[in-house]
Length: 352
Ligand SMILES: C[S@@+](CC[C@H](N)C(=O)[O-])C[C@H]1O[C@@H](n2cnc3c(N)ncnc32)[C@H](O)[C@@H]1O
Image (cartoon, rainbow, N blue to C red; front, side):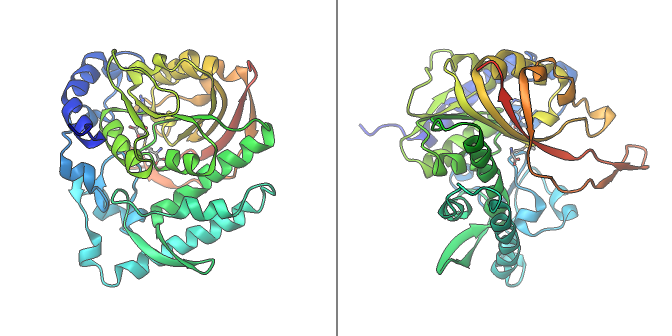
């Protein structure tokens, strides 16, 4: 009998995992009784079709933004969470539009890489490369004499893995053997970290919908490496990419060399931020590279403030790259509001 594929496992185990997620959602990893964000992830169904071909879909909360489809915000946000966009079918010369945007981000990446003398520039080609069925639409781009498949998304995300590795190398000569991403969308940044570092064991932790999509995506990128940790009876396995639900995060019982988190901690309640720091990051994570707002976006959304996390004092904090300028969004009453800026930080845990 053939081994069950990850897609088969995800489809078979997803309904039970959703039940557990809903039963435990008021625990501090989500504190569901105190806010309303990300609720659809606790109900969303997964199908073989979605898992094998979510490229080009507007799939809510997995990190793909209007820019990744070269679409204007308005057309993106009015679409249902799981709508198939397929802008490629309705926009003339779509590939050249994708290529133009992707090249913009690639040129930026090359400029940014100059600050890391030790960073192997060939790694940049590996992290912009995008050839799977999952993710945003791609275009062939001429780079370093090769035609590489690149998406706007892969080019736009690439600096994250570069900064994470660059800062890591500046702070330690120890090889990066383990990595964890919390709130990783569908897993692209974890894939990038795994592609350019000698990582043996990896962990991906996210909400229900995401752990299904990421398990599929990461298995497509790294065949036979994904291990689902979705149930009390599942074990974390050394040498694997362990896709772990947040309520089972205590199963991770070894120090993590590097944790990454992008645009994710800042959406959480203060209680949830404090929980992740107090129970997991402080005792287990040596280095954390993150890009998040340090203060809430709006007062009414319930987001916490990373500045108020008590355990922040346990870290020495090094500035990361300057992020894009603030932009204005209207307040609930329509008055203009300057959104807090995303800040990049490389945090060194002084307890190690
Ligand atoms: C805005 S998305 C960002 C995704 C990706 N990091 C990126 O930058 O493209 C926020 C991510 O955080 C995850 N997330 C939100 N609350 C979470 C929680 N309490 N525990 C774990 N993950 C959470 C979401 O499911 C989602 O993957």
